[in-house]
Length: 196
Image (cartoon, rainbow, N blue to C red; front, side, top):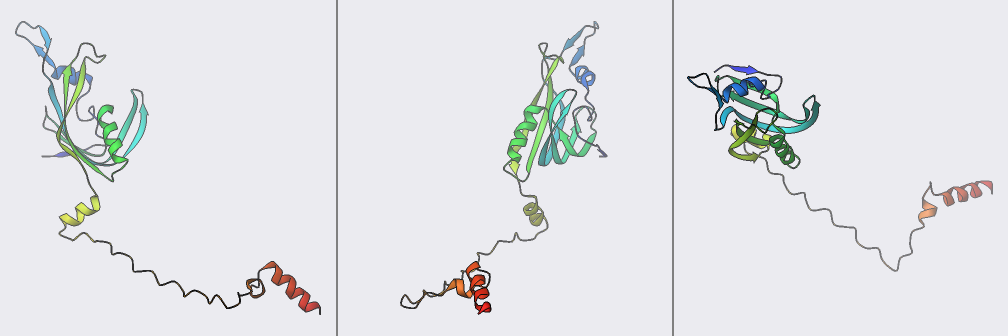
Protein backbone atom coordinates (compact mmCIF):
# COMPACT_ATOMS: atom_id res chain seq x y z
CA UNK A 1 0.00 0.00 0.00
CA UNK A 2 1.37 3.39 -0.97
CA UNK A 3 1.58 5.89 1.88
CA UNK A 4 1.03 9.56 1.10
CA UNK A 5 3.10 11.91 3.25
CA UNK A 6 1.03 14.84 4.47
CA UNK A 7 2.09 18.09 6.14
CA UNK A 8 -0.51 17.32 8.80
CA UNK A 9 -3.28 14.77 9.22
CA UNK A 10 -6.72 16.31 9.36
CA UNK A 11 -10.07 14.87 8.38
CA UNK A 12 -10.08 17.17 5.34
CA UNK A 13 -6.50 16.32 4.29
CA UNK A 14 -7.42 12.62 4.39
CA UNK A 15 -10.18 13.14 1.81
CA UNK A 16 -13.22 14.16 3.85
CA UNK A 17 -14.31 17.75 3.41
CA UNK A 18 -17.88 18.73 4.26
CA UNK A 19 -19.26 17.74 0.84
CA UNK A 20 -17.52 14.35 0.86
CA UNK A 21 -18.89 13.60 4.34
CA UNK A 22 -22.43 14.57 3.34
CA UNK A 23 -22.12 12.43 0.19
CA UNK A 24 -21.04 9.44 2.33
CA UNK A 25 -24.11 9.96 4.54
CA UNK A 26 -26.58 10.31 1.66
CA UNK A 27 -28.78 7.63 0.09
CA UNK A 28 -30.29 8.28 -3.33
CA UNK A 29 -33.31 6.05 -3.89
CA UNK A 30 -34.57 4.60 -7.18
CA UNK A 31 -37.10 7.41 -7.27
CA UNK A 32 -34.18 9.92 -7.00
CA UNK A 33 -35.30 10.80 -3.48
CA UNK A 34 -32.37 11.78 -1.27
CA UNK A 35 -32.35 10.65 2.36
CA UNK A 36 -29.70 10.50 5.04
CA UNK A 37 -28.36 7.19 6.32
CA UNK A 38 -29.58 6.48 9.86
CA UNK A 39 -26.36 4.77 10.97
CA UNK A 40 -22.86 6.06 11.48
CA UNK A 41 -20.53 5.82 8.51
CA UNK A 42 -16.88 4.94 9.20
CA UNK A 43 -14.53 7.46 7.56
CA UNK A 44 -11.00 7.07 8.93
CA UNK A 45 -8.94 4.64 10.95
CA UNK A 46 -6.22 6.62 12.74
CA UNK A 47 -3.27 5.30 14.76
CA UNK A 48 -0.40 7.22 16.22
CA UNK A 49 2.09 7.99 18.92
CA UNK A 50 1.80 11.54 20.23
CA UNK A 51 4.79 13.07 22.03
CA UNK A 52 3.50 16.62 22.51
CA UNK A 53 0.53 18.88 21.86
CA UNK A 54 0.56 22.49 20.69
CA UNK A 55 -2.47 24.81 20.75
CA UNK A 56 -3.38 26.76 17.63
CA UNK A 57 -6.06 28.98 16.11
CA UNK A 58 -7.73 28.90 12.67
CA UNK A 59 -10.77 30.46 11.01
CA UNK A 60 -12.78 27.56 12.42
CA UNK A 61 -11.65 28.14 16.01
CA UNK A 62 -9.09 26.79 18.45
CA UNK A 63 -7.47 23.40 18.00
CA UNK A 64 -4.76 21.23 19.51
CA UNK A 65 -2.04 19.97 17.14
CA UNK A 66 -0.62 16.62 18.22
CA UNK A 67 3.05 16.06 17.36
CA UNK A 68 4.59 12.61 16.88
CA UNK A 69 3.99 9.98 14.19
CA UNK A 70 0.50 9.29 12.82
CA UNK A 71 -1.13 7.11 10.17
CA UNK A 72 -4.67 7.35 8.80
CA UNK A 73 -6.53 5.06 6.40
CA UNK A 74 -9.38 6.53 4.34
CA UNK A 75 -11.98 3.75 4.63
CA UNK A 76 -13.79 4.83 1.44
CA UNK A 77 -10.79 4.90 -0.92
CA UNK A 78 -8.25 2.71 0.91
CA UNK A 79 -5.66 5.49 0.72
CA UNK A 80 -3.14 5.69 3.60
CA UNK A 81 -1.62 8.91 4.95
CA UNK A 82 1.31 9.60 7.28
CA UNK A 83 2.39 12.77 9.05
CA UNK A 84 4.32 14.08 12.05
CA UNK A 85 1.34 16.29 13.00
CA UNK A 86 -2.32 15.44 13.58
CA UNK A 87 -5.37 17.60 14.25
CA UNK A 88 -8.41 15.70 15.49
CA UNK A 89 -11.80 16.93 16.68
CA UNK A 90 -11.28 18.86 19.93
CA UNK A 91 -13.09 16.35 22.14
CA UNK A 92 -10.45 13.75 21.13
CA UNK A 93 -7.27 15.83 20.99
CA UNK A 94 -7.95 17.53 24.33
CA UNK A 95 -8.07 14.21 26.19
CA UNK A 96 -4.83 13.10 24.51
CA UNK A 97 -3.25 16.48 25.31
CA UNK A 98 -4.15 16.04 29.00
CA UNK A 99 -2.51 12.60 29.05
CA UNK A 100 0.65 14.10 27.51
CA UNK A 101 1.03 16.49 30.45
CA UNK A 102 2.17 13.59 32.65
CA UNK A 103 3.53 11.07 30.09
CA UNK A 104 6.34 11.31 27.52
CA UNK A 105 4.21 9.67 24.79
CA UNK A 106 0.68 8.38 24.26
CA UNK A 107 -0.17 5.69 21.69
CA UNK A 108 -3.74 5.49 20.40
CA UNK A 109 -5.92 3.97 17.70
CA UNK A 110 -9.29 5.41 16.65
CA UNK A 111 -12.15 4.74 14.27
CA UNK A 112 -13.59 8.11 13.25
CA UNK A 113 -17.13 8.01 11.86
CA UNK A 114 -19.83 10.51 10.89
CA UNK A 115 -23.54 10.42 11.66
CA UNK A 116 -26.24 12.58 10.10
CA UNK A 117 -27.63 15.16 12.53
CA UNK A 118 -30.16 17.72 11.33
CA UNK A 119 -29.61 19.87 14.45
CA UNK A 120 -25.90 20.35 13.69
CA UNK A 121 -24.74 23.34 11.63
CA UNK A 122 -22.80 20.99 9.32
CA UNK A 123 -25.59 18.39 9.03
CA UNK A 124 -23.50 15.71 10.74
CA UNK A 125 -21.53 14.96 13.90
CA UNK A 126 -18.38 12.92 14.42
CA UNK A 127 -18.21 9.84 16.58
CA UNK A 128 -15.00 8.19 17.73
CA UNK A 129 -14.45 4.60 18.80
CA UNK A 130 -11.20 3.57 20.43
CA UNK A 131 -9.55 0.63 18.66
CA UNK A 132 -7.52 -0.18 21.78
CA UNK A 133 -6.86 1.40 25.14
CA UNK A 134 -4.53 4.36 24.89
CA UNK A 135 -1.09 3.43 26.19
CA UNK A 136 1.49 5.61 27.81
CA UNK A 137 4.94 4.73 26.59
CA UNK A 138 8.55 5.65 26.94
CA UNK A 139 9.94 5.69 23.38
CA UNK A 140 13.54 5.02 24.46
CA UNK A 141 12.57 1.98 26.51
CA UNK A 142 10.46 0.64 23.63
CA UNK A 143 13.32 1.20 21.17
CA UNK A 144 15.80 -0.68 23.35
CA UNK A 145 13.34 -3.55 23.78
CA UNK A 146 12.72 -3.79 20.02
CA UNK A 147 16.49 -3.82 19.39
CA UNK A 148 16.92 -6.69 21.87
CA UNK A 149 18.89 -4.50 24.25
CA UNK A 150 18.34 -4.56 27.97
CA UNK A 151 16.94 -1.49 29.59
CA UNK A 152 19.68 -0.06 31.82
CA UNK A 153 18.95 0.20 35.51
CA UNK A 154 20.43 3.07 37.41
CA UNK A 155 22.70 2.04 40.23
CA UNK A 156 22.08 3.41 43.68
CA UNK A 157 24.59 6.11 44.60
CA UNK A 158 27.52 5.05 46.79
CA UNK A 159 27.27 5.70 50.50
CA UNK A 160 28.40 9.22 51.32
CA UNK A 161 31.72 9.53 53.14
CA UNK A 162 31.54 9.50 56.92
CA UNK A 163 31.39 12.95 58.48
CA UNK A 164 34.60 14.15 60.17
CA UNK A 165 35.02 13.25 63.82
CA UNK A 166 33.64 15.87 66.17
CA UNK A 167 36.16 18.37 67.50
CA UNK A 168 37.50 17.98 70.99
CA UNK A 169 35.18 20.09 73.15
CA UNK A 170 38.16 21.02 75.39
CA UNK A 171 40.23 22.41 72.46
CA UNK A 172 40.08 26.17 71.87
CA UNK A 173 37.92 27.23 68.93
CA UNK A 174 39.86 28.34 65.85
CA UNK A 175 40.02 32.07 65.20
CA UNK A 176 38.28 32.13 61.81
CA UNK A 177 38.60 35.91 61.50
CA UNK A 178 42.33 35.93 62.10
CA UNK A 179 43.06 33.08 59.70
CA UNK A 180 40.68 34.30 56.98
CA UNK A 181 42.50 36.72 54.65
CA UNK A 182 39.27 38.09 53.17
CA UNK A 183 37.41 38.71 56.42
CA UNK A 184 37.14 42.50 57.05
CA UNK A 185 38.63 42.33 60.55
CA UNK A 186 41.67 40.48 59.13
CA UNK A 187 42.25 43.30 56.65
CA UNK A 188 42.05 45.90 59.40
CA UNK A 189 44.42 43.92 61.61
CA UNK A 190 46.84 43.40 58.69
CA UNK A 191 46.85 47.12 57.91
CA UNK A 192 47.36 47.98 61.59
CA UNK A 193 50.22 45.49 61.81
CA UNK A 194 51.94 47.00 58.76
CA UNK A 195 51.82 50.55 60.22
CA UNK A 196 53.77 49.57 63.35
